[in-house]
Image (tube, rainbow, N blue to C red; front, side, top):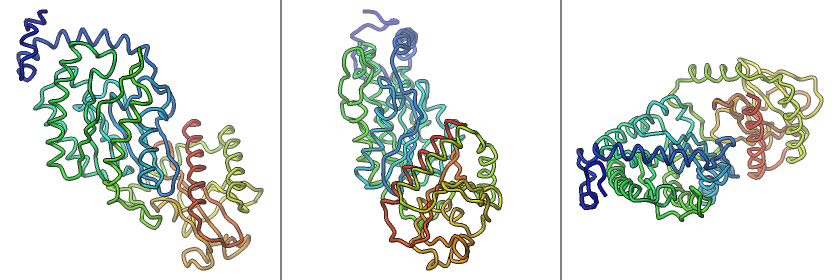
Length: 420
């Protein structure tokens, strides 16, 4: 069959797709073919829930998945059954820590626009970034030289702002997706192999970058784009590459949380702007918060559970019990210390801790001794306060307390997002 002037014998020759003239001749046909596929994809399910998934544990790693293709979640309706959910669970099973995965994905995302999008994000919050791109470029037969240039530029800039590794995930077999399982899909798959070779070479000479080859993913059931099995397979491979790379990152609760590369004044200004943007008086939010605080108090068996929001030089207080206290000084407070730490904080006996023994809640009524807290983030990612528990009796530090508190803090954050 003739294809824009190229016969089937030419299409099969090694190196044909590397010729600029061949790409130009095939481009119109590939565009028409993709238009038909996009019509089919409009009927394909994809996740509609919040693009955040967490796996249980203390001192969580925070991962960003950015891209298209596998990152989008075609074929399932929740991120929990897509790549983010399986990656969170797979990584936590390997590290023994919690995992928080955010996903920023769109079917049209391409490498040449990735840098602009990522520059607008607070990448310093992440312990690693997972780049899942290339399907579009494979289908468009993008020049290998352009792919290499754009990827090198992207990795160089990410290396300056991300605290830990950047993983570049290989383009999976194009024809493993039913709608692409055709002769033209075979051409795109051949080109994807070339793009993957370029990616591997770029990552090999970039210290903080890791190229992740993918096995042949399970062919989905009839008429499905992908299924949970495919995402589970990919997540297992990615987690196996990511877990050892993360061992160079800090994970203890006494490690400072630094909003790199911001200076402290700039970070505080952004944090306060996030506080100002949140309507803490929203009736539905307050009702849900009161319920969550009651659950927190009962779950950890403490005298009081509190949401504190740091507003300039004071703490705004919302408690699980009736109390006349609605504000406290921020300076020297438990909450102000908590948001500056990587994970949560447990103080077994505040009277034995020189940081807090003179704080009003400890030195005076109600004379609290035990504290545990976990940072609360705004929808835009700044730490606005903490979910805290207090008790007048000291107790041993318990990792299970922080794990439960983190779970509950994430529930508060979800409520903040839905009320935003």
